Amino acid sequence: MQLRLLVPSEVLVDEPVTKVVAVAEDGAFCLLPRHIDFVAALVPGVFLFHDREAQERLFAVDRGLLVKCGQEVLVSTPNAVGGDDLGQLEALVEERFLALDEQERKSRTTLARLEAGTLRRFRNLQER
Image (cartoon, rainbow, N blue to C red; front, side):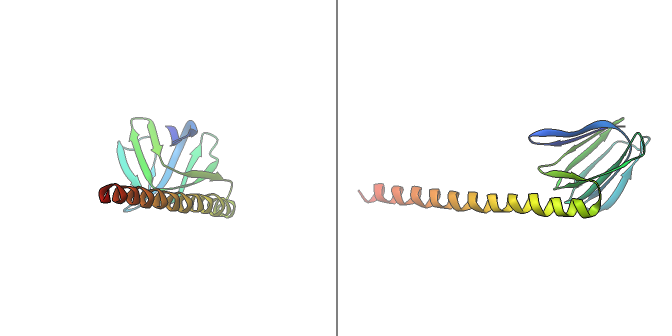
């Protein structure tokens, strides 16, 4: 199968694989080359696959979508990070996703200030 793991800014993986394991809303599942076409909504969790040399590769993925059509498996997710083992993967997830949470908090604060300022200006215009 040809696996493509996509995030908004880049293609993280584009290579042949022999096995894919992911977690969907109703549980974990495994795809092998002769599996029927399949679509699943992914939940945050561990995504793993075996490359042609039977090496297991691990990624932590945010929610997303997996589509298997023929021999092509496409995975689209807003965030993903790869690691060599579960311990390293956990550390990378904490580091990167906590940084994203901090950026999101700052963005929300800035947006709230902009909205409040806009509402104040509209109120001032209505009073005139």
